[in-house]
Length: 223
Image (cartoon, rainbow, N blue to C red):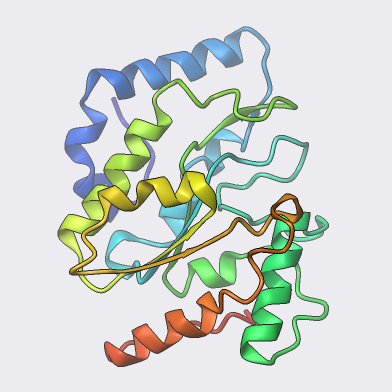
């Protein structure tokens, strides 16, 4: 089975694509479409995070849970929306924290985070697809097994990645990460439902301090 994914990732995850659960996952998605269900993001964007941040380029991981399930929002990057789409509440709070943390203005910045992805910020959702209008509708079809393997592979095969884990779901993934090789930053989820507990985490400056200490260029979070 040929999975259309960026070549470095294809090689790193080669064994995963051969497993029965992944074949079953692909078959499930085909059946969903055949039955007339609308799936987000569009097929060409399911692996967008992998396309924009090749395996060898990953410096930072921001882990989300589920793609946006409203029309025109999901484009394969956690927390991000395409150009011209209003930033959702969680992303607005992320921007507020960046402004406070770094003392910069993001006034007028779109909700499209491709600029981060191209600098090495891997914007991974634990679940890569969703049925239109139904949050978490693809949460039990095998995606989490796959993305757990992605996180584990990054942890095993690379060094010095900064993992940002926001909210209890993301934080549960820290068992997959070797904290002797990587930096794990934990905070509340940026959703307004978390009551503002995300604010003050200063993950963006802390991330850049780690990267700089490793001799890597910091992330320009204004891009």
